[in-house]
Amino acid sequence: MTRLFEDQMEENAALLQRLAPSPLTRRKVLLGGGAAALAIAAVACGTDEDPFVLEDPPNPDLTTPPPKQEGGGQGAPGGGDVATAKLAAGLEVLAVNTYQGALDAAGRGALGEVPPAVATFATTARDHHQAHLRAWNDLLTSLGEQPVSEPLPALAGPVGDQLGQVSDVVGVARLALTLEDTAASTYFEAIPTIGNAEALELAATIQPIDMQHAAVLRYVLGEYPVPESFADAEESAIPA
Image (cartoon, rainbow, N blue to C red):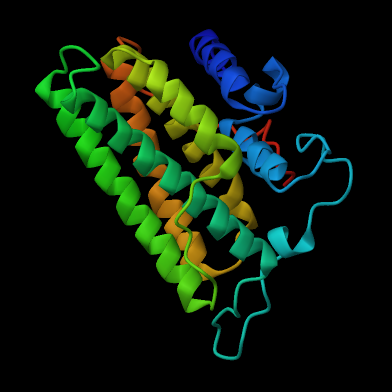
């Protein structure tokens, strides 16, 4: 990783340390923003284990594609694919709520002067995440699961509190950037583990959109918006 990327991750780590209910070290954050999201989800489910320490073999439902049916089609998603879909939907609810909260604050004048282009971006990003949420929930309901309407419990309060403390566009942009980086990394790390074709297509088509959101936010913050030439998966928190 370049020094510029490491500096950005250091900054994201500092913010995640304030948002996450368990400590995050620099090493853990550099393993990927998606790992942070998965860790927070694990805390929300009540586990006391450090979710970054993957000493035991991973859950086979998460990493092993379901058996193919006759004719080349894939079977129904395993429990891991369903869990991934629910996690993704929870992240999308969080993103929708965050952007909507920012737009509401701007409407009240709580963020000072908001350039029209920034307001347009926030509205567009919110609508993108709403469409992503709708797609994940359509998949979940088709599998007989309940749609997700609430954000990840362990993040909803802290992110809401953080949003309530910002007083300008820069503060909102930094918070949104952390969420977009976390979502993009989560999708990137989950893609190799998804066995269901529809879930895989969703994750693979949503992840680049989150990266585009992040690039725009970096531009708003005066940072270099173009990512590395190739995504770096060597330090992924999810074993290959």
